[in-house]
Image 1 (cartoon, rainbow, N blue to C red):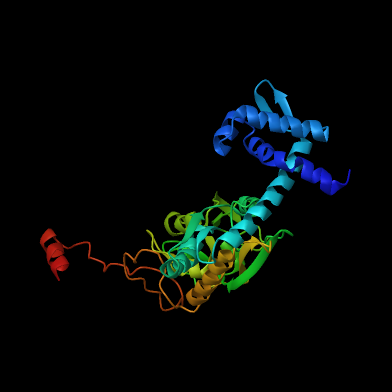
Image 2 (image 1 turned 90 degrees about the vertical axis):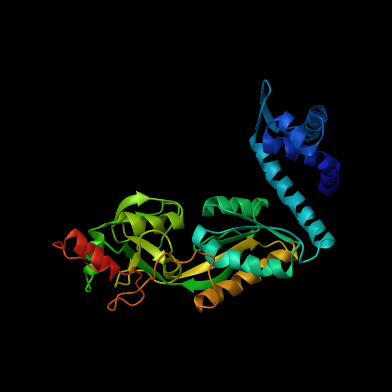
Length: 343
């Protein structure tokens, strides 16, 4: 039998197979697709009999995909997603429908939310789902259709994905304003390596040179957590300058006067499929425009207003530290202190 005829023969059973395979539990799959468990079970059984292979290993009421089942699930997802995307493109307009977007927390605030705000004013029927995902998880979500756009500074290379370069980001080493290195003007790499950093797990890069053996005092996955740890807990951190400049939390960040990290690309990753809805490109263009505006200092970020005026010290251009309160002499009496406060 020709392969096309064989595919047509099993096609009607594939949606039922996909539902059962994704949940590996008949009652849950039954509720999800609004079909009886017996109907799903019968479709899967007919598919297995037609193919002559077991797609599930069964132990009592437990189901687990076999190697053949996992392979068929991947192909079924891809085929159904292509059809769904084509129908979406045909039946909906560029300015309506859902788009699933993910980015690290600071990039969400700086780039994604302002872009979505502009689009929402023009296209009220465009519904954005904003979520958080690590790079490895985001790759799978993009391929499987659970995510449409991922903004990242990590290199991602898969044939199914399209990578759009948004900009180049400058990176520096930052410290809290009470860190000993903030008093130094002539820092060396050796000085940096004497102090611990907050850094990412091995699966994520903060772009610190791999040949330099730094000490880690804490490992965190999320960029905004690294920013807070640096400002409040006294650990050094490698941060994008555009993120550090916009920090408005407790504590303060100081950019150290040493350059050890080259600029790094910022990407937007999406699927390559030609049938993907046009609204994905609409959101991509809006994010790219917002990145350009933020880099050029245009527009406002979505961060809350500063709690205090941020003044860079004269000797460190671009550093961020709050003004220090005037010193009160230790020998002032209680009345003298009260008078000093009134003045």
